Length: 416
Image (cartoon, rainbow, N blue to C red):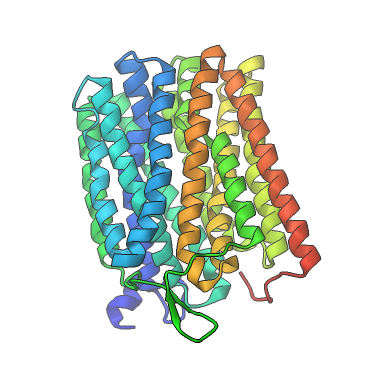
C-alpha cells in the first residue's frame, strides 16, 4: 500500500482499506443524492401535486417490486461482466430520479423516480459484493458492513438537513431534485476508484475435478431464514415516507416531517458506526440480535407511533418512534449482509447478496401497497400491520438461532 493509500485507508493493517473507503464514500454521496429526493417526494406528490396517499404507496411499491427483479438480474449480469462494471453502470443511472420534479404530471414524476430506483437496485448487490471482496480479515467483516451503513445513512441524514433548509426557504422542488444529481455523480466517481469486483464468473469443482461455471447456489437453512425474515421486514419497513407524512400531517408542518426523517437516519447511522462491533462474535448471538434488536425493536418503533397517534403524546413521541426505527435499521443493515457473507458457500455469495436485496424489495413491494391502502382507513391500521410483520420476522430469526445452537454451527472466536 502506497502513501496515497495510507492517506485514504489509514494504517497498513486497518480494516478501513482504500477500497472500503471508496465504496463507503460512494454510498455516502449516493444517499446524499437520492435520499433527498425520497424525503421530499411524498410531500411533492401528496401536498404539492395534491395526489392521494395510495398513489404514493403504489409508486413505492412499483419501485421496490421492480427493484427485486433488477437485484436478481444485476447479480447475473455482474457475474458475467464483473460486479465493478455493473455497479458503475447502475450507479450512473440513478440520477434519473433527480428529474422527477421537472413535471407536474404525477405519472411522469413517478416513472422517473421508479427508473432511478431500479438502477439503484441493479447495482446494490454488486456494491455489497465489492465490499465483501475488500475484506481480507474475517474478524472485521461485521465492522466493515457497519461502516458502510454508517456512511450510507450518514449521507441520508445530511440529505435530510438539506431538504429541511430547502423547504424552510421555499426552494422549488424541481431545483432541489436537480441539485441531487451532483452528489450522485460524485458517488459514481468514488465507486470507480475501487478496485474490487473485477472477477467475472465464479466456479466450483465437480466430483470429477472439472470446473463448473456459475453452478446453481445452494443456500443454507440460515440464509433461507434471513431471506424470509427480510421479506417480512420489508412488509413492515414500508417507505419511510409514510412516517414523514404522518408527522407532517399531525403537526401541520412539513419541516417537522423532515426533522423526523433526520432523527431516523441519524440513529441508524450512529448504530452502524458505534454498535456494529458489539452485535456478537458467534452466529447464534448474531441471529438473536438480528431478531431482537433488529426486527422486534422495529416493531416497537411502529407501536410507539401508534401510541402517539391514538393518545396525542406530541412531536417528541413521534421522534422517539423514528429513533427506534432508525436504531433497528442500523442493526439489520449491519447483520444481514455480514451473516450472508459468512454462512454462504463461496460460489453462492454473490447470488446470496442478490437474493437478500430481492427478498427485501419483494417485501417492500407488498408492504407499500398494503400500507398505502390501510392508510386510507387510518394511519393506525398501517402501523399495526407493520408491528405484526416485525414480530413474525423476529420470531423467524430466533428460531434460526436455536437451529444453529443445536447443530453447533458457530464462528470460531475472533474479535468483531
